Length: 144
Image (cartoon, rainbow, N blue to C red; front, top):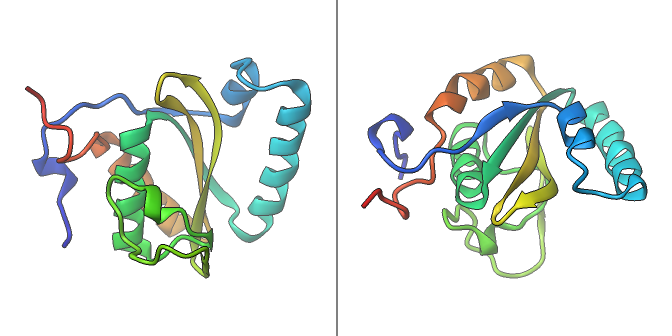
C-alpha cells in the first residue's frame, strides 16, 4: 500500500547533512571513520549519487519504505525484518539487487544518527531530494 507522506502529521527530526558533518561529529573512532570512507568509496562506484541525512530510527524505516515503493528493493543485504515499515516479508538472511542502497554511519543520540542513501541515477536522487521535506516518523508514531 502506497502511503502519501504529505498526509501524515507526525514527528519530524530529519535534516540534510554531509559526509564531512559525519566525520566532524566525533561519533566514530578514526579507524571506524576510515572504514566508513573506504566502504563509501566502493558504494559510490555503483551508486554515484549520495544524500546524507541526520534522522531518527523511525524516519530511517519510513524513508526506506518510501524508497522501496518508488525505486524497488534496496541493493545488498536485506534488513527489512527489523523495520517499523517493513516491505520485504522474508525472515531469512538474503540480498536484493536494486538501483539504490543506504548505509547507517553512526548513532549520535538515542535512536538518532547519520544515514546516507546512494542512487544509481541522478533522477532517482532528485526525486528523493523532493521527498526529504516530507520525511517523518510515519503512521506508527502519531502526535498525541
